[in-house]
Each structure stands twice: as structure tokens, then as C-alpha cells.
Image: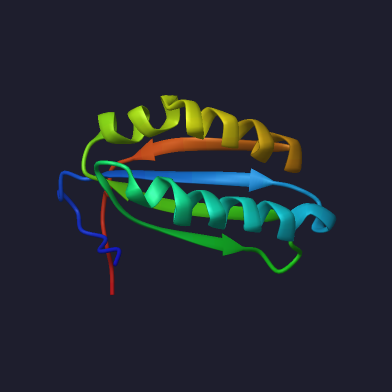
Length: 106
């Protein structure tokens, strides 16, 4: 379960994917499989969510990690490098960006 709290010490990563409606479901399937079979089992993983826009041209992925190094180690693994090559074929672009929570409301 994701908990968004300022000053939690966790690493937040937001990744945006841009694709065509024709590849949206394939990309969503690839991302879901990556989380279920590999990413969620990596050290430091806390939680993640996938969001699809109405036009099916963008997916936003929000994930939380205990430490920045945990996320980086997952990205550098042979398994994730292989998966990212496939993911890259399904979209125009994707970019993971690390953030710190600056505030929460509500």
C-alpha cells in the first residue's frame, strides 16, 4: 500500500510512458508482468501504481522505494535491462524521474 508522506525518507519515482492507443494494452501488460514477476520482489520495493489516460496515449507509473540505491540496483539488473528493451519497443518514450515529496494535501 502506498503512503505518500513528506519527509518519509523513501525514494519516489514517477515514470511517464508515451505510446499509441494501439500499443497501450501491450505496454500495460508488459509493465504489469514486470511488477508482478520481478520488480515487486526486489530489495527496497515498497509499492507502485499504474495510471492510463483516457486517450490511451500515456501511462504514468508511481513507485516508492526504501532508498534511491534500491531503485537504481533494480534498473541495472540483467532482468530489468532485458525487460526495458521490450518496453522501449512498445512506446515512443519513457522517462523515470526521482522525486522527494514536497507536500501532501487532503
